[in-house]
Every structure is written in structure tokens, then in C-alpha cells.
Length: 165
View 1 (cartoon, rainbow, N blue to C red):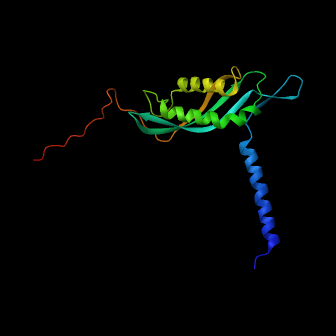
View 2 (cartoon, rainbow, N blue to C red):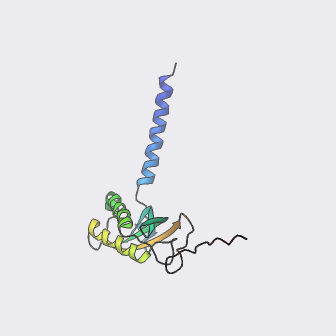
View 3 (cartoon, rainbow, N blue to C red):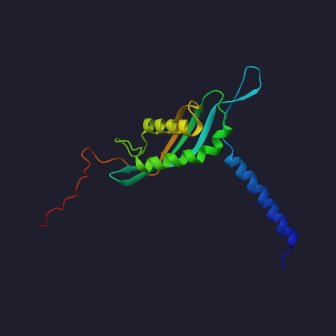
């Protein structure tokens, strides 16, 4: 027979652990810096979680790049308001990546940073309000595979069969 008090303790411990983990994961990540007077002031930066951006060539997914970005907020912008709308921003970025890929012509290991930053800045203006985000910074890009695009012309070398004697 199972002791009910041990089950309730286990449940309570699991619930508390889950709340602690959830609150630490879902809280907006913000850096802080010291002000002249010695008190803490928030650095106007909002860190977006890592996203998986597809690299698409000729209508096919050839690679994925894991991208982490920071939003540099304008002075007076409240970072807590960004937390609620972050899922909508992330969804818009991933949808756009499939519709009009952020693929570079010279490599399949990185996204087209300038196009991605411009898109994210435009989406931030639409979601959070014009002027709330000053700039977008791509912090990290990690490719899933170390692939290079084919040579100019798009054709891959064709292996020919050697004649048999």
C-alpha cells in the first residue's frame, strides 16, 4: 500500500521545483549596470531565446542555423511588456524565414544578418510600438551542419564512370 503523506510530499516538492524552473526560464533576461549614484539600473537590453532558422536553397531546406539575438531598447522602454509579446515576434520571424528565407548566397552556415535584423526591427515596431527598440544584435549563430553551397552556377560536380577495360 502506498503512503499518502509521502505522495503529497513528492507532489509538493515536484510542484515547487517546477515553479522555480519555470520562473527562471520564462523571466526576461536583462543585464544590469551600475549608475553613478551606486544604485542598480537596468540595461536596456532584452535577450530573445535561441531560434532555429532554416536555410533554404532552390525550395529545399539544406541546413538550420540556431540564432540568438538581443534587442537594444530605447530609453524609457519597459522590458516587462516585451515578455508578453515575445512569442508573437518569434512566430513572425520563423514564418518569414520559411516564406522569404534569410539565406546568404555565399554560405549555408549563417543567416543573412542584415536582412534578419531589418525584419526583426520592423516587426518590433509593429508589435511593441514605433521607437521602442533601437537596434537588433545577432549574438550567436550556430549551424546544425557545416555545409557550403555549391560553386557558382549551382551545379554539383558529376561523377563519371571510368570506362571498363
